[in-house]
Structures are given as C-alpha cells and as structure tokens.
Length: 282
Image (cartoon, rainbow, N blue to C red; front, side):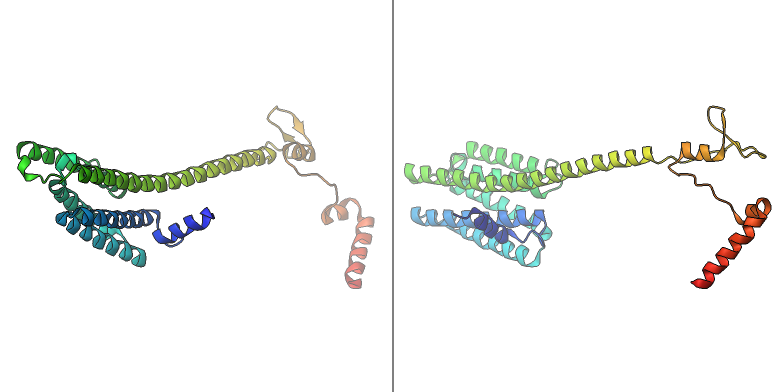
C-alpha cells in the first residue's frame, strides 16, 4: 500500500499547502471530521430511532460541509470561526438533554469544542475555555436539580453504543487535529534548527573573514622627511614594511614618471620612447 499517495490525497482534501495556510487546512480538517462524525452518528441514531439526535446530526453535517466547501474554494475561513463555535456550542448543549446528560456521549464532544477554541482563538483561556467550563458545570447542576429535563436512553445497548461511538469520534477528531499541529510544529522546529545552524556557520565565516582582513584605522604617525611610520609599539618602520605587516598587500618597487625624470633622466627618455613605440605598434 502506497501511504504517500493516501496522505497526499488527504492533504488535497484539506487544502493545497501551496495555496492554503496551515490554519486554513486545520479548519478544513475539523469541518471534514465533524461532517464524517455526524454521518456516523446519524446512521447510528437512525438505527436506535432517536429523532432529536437525528435532527442535530443532520444540521451538523450540512453546516460543516458548507463551511468546508466555502473554506476550501474561497481559501478564507476567518469569518467562519466564531459562527462555527456558536453552532457547535448550541448543538452539543442541546444534545446534552436528549442523550442522557452527563452519563451520555455529549460530554465528550466538549473536548472537541475546547480543542477548536485553543486552535482558532488567539486567547482561548480568557473567554472561550472558561465559558465552556462554566457551561459544563451549569449543565451538571441543572441535571442534578432537575433530572426530568434529561432524556434517558431506551436501553443499556443504546447507552453503550452511544457512549462508545462518542468516545471513538472524539478520539479520532482530536487525534487528527493534534497530529497535524504537531507535524507542523516539527517542521517549524527543524526549519528553525537549520536556520540556527546556518546562522552559526555564517557567524563563524564572518569572524574568520574579519580576522583575515586587517584594516588600518586611526591616525598614523608619518615622518615628513623619510616617510617612516610609527607602529603601536613605538617602532619606526619603512612604509612598505608597515603595509606588509598590517595588511594582505604585497609591495612591488617601481618608479613613478616624476622620480624617473628626476633621478634617472637618461633612462626616463628611453622609457618614454619605449612607451611611445609600444603605443604606436598597438
């Protein structure tokens, strides 16, 4: 079995990585997972004959598929974050009273809602997570003082199947989301490690280059007559010796035209003659 093709196909279902952001792909994955989970629960609720749960399942399927298609085609999901949270919150809270309350399968779906909040809200622990916790405690209190508001399961098999399906769906949805997030974190971590190693290598290369390059700075004491230069140890050196000791340059002695005419006039004329002749031949 070619797992790369399977994961590649799954990647295309959640959005092309070259055109969709990581957050957008996570949103698409969540919506697709909710629609699949809703389909599984719908088939199960049809089997047990729970009409209210069927309505909730159908609404979840239609809403999640609509958000998934819109986000996938438009490559834009930000406008759907808050409405989706509200929709999921209402669906899970409503299902609480029709699926045996705290002893049913709906409490597990609050984990999906919490995971959704942590991923898509910038500050989930300021508003959304405390709100979810307060809601769960409120539902527990209402169920404790008014147990008649909660619809019980029709049989032990109904109870067992609903709780089992809920646990399975929540584990799969949260597991997929956490896996994708961790893989992204691993890619970012390896990228940061590579960039850090490259930065260290570049720093070492720059330091090595700076050590090899010797630059003359500041005031240089220069004798006005013999042109010797005084180094930092107080020693007067010939100009060419000083340059060789403090740079990568190599001195090659020659004569400028003025000195040649002053000190070697007979050679200067021949030098000019050779220069003129060479220019003419060219």
